[in-house]
Length: 543
Image (cartoon, rainbow, N blue to C red; front, side, top):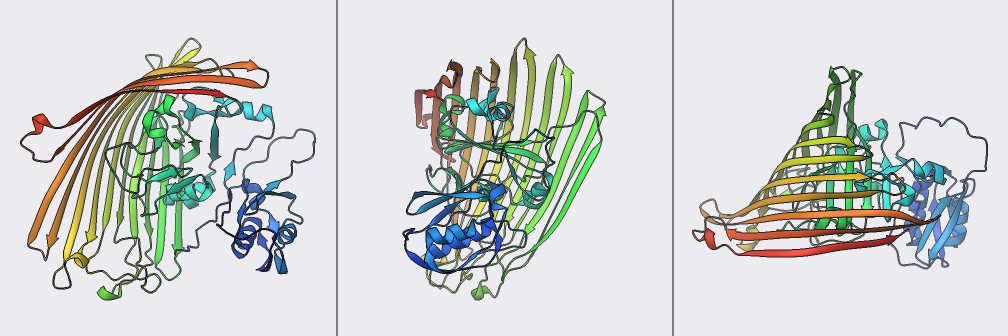
């Protein structure tokens, strides 16, 4: 429904869902252009899925295709000169992969273009061995990681243009990562389609979200952090229970921000504007300042940002246009202290507020991009995070301890007038106040080829949800519930080479948990229902 001048079609993969058979003749009319755009148009016209895993291939030039022909012939036309091959996985799914370059003498690497997203896809074992998957909580090389990982390195140009979009920019580049599309800072994330529901509840989300080593949420929606000054993103797909617990049934998404520079003063800034088809005007801006407080010992890195995304939905019943605009602003600050009792300490704060002026949806049967409601339906997400992380070398091992506290406030308003007729207006409001305390201390070592990790983790989550129904401004019915979760866990994981090309990994996590729930204001809180649970998550992998 929304097309902005700053919007970027995912270079990592172009997907169009379909039902047609690849061998059927189709009518194609696709002009020349960027390979990713051309492939998307061919997939749309043929009703098939066309996937281009490598953004470098997607960014190449294609001559397009016109005429009546089979899908195979059409694909053969668009790959001419693109130095790529077609792979038919089945009649409905096609992949286009780049051909490996011919062998040639080594040369210094060219600098990354500021106009594209760089995806780390190693071409040989030596290159892969240099890439460490930090989300594994141990120094695991990419080639030996026992699972599927998507690692995306962000250049400054891409982060400047897309940082204000937050997680939406990530889901656009990673087909394995999806969202509920309820709106910025309202979405829940899914990996490979593994989900609980679109709504918030007392249980952990199926995708764990982290900023470095700091946990971002428990059962709340994605805070949609701004990506400006973030250096890379790691997504681990599939269950990671032995390392992360129940929140990793689908996988893990980890944002790695740029650390403070201890020796150099630096600053960057970005300003952008956008227009939305049949909508309004938007703008965003961000700045980064890095200040060494004590040269080589103490440094401060501060990121501030603000963005306004224009609306594109009209409400004729209230005489309003572009009602669903979104505004976000906030900051991230990290103070790094080195050589403090032989440890490196990071003190950090994250603040972000996201406000939607109205609901991000339309109703079936209404004209396109319109919705008739009696009341506005705003949404507000206020997110505060404070953390302390300490790292220290212990011989050949490393000790990492992270403690964080999150305060997450959500306010949602719904128009319930349709339930009570046209004579009255009804507003349903839900307020969620979430407090999350988390701690983890771990020791890891063993090097990139035979890593090991062991640690202890704890989580306390307090979620208070209150609901109010107001009819014509004078009748209010209130209710609310509080849910608390406490978890203590011991975990460990060990990898060892079994043969020259085979690595075995074994791990486990033992968790004790207690869950309680009660009505807000209930005088019998002492007898609130509770549940105690013990569980052991084991993993065994051969890579």
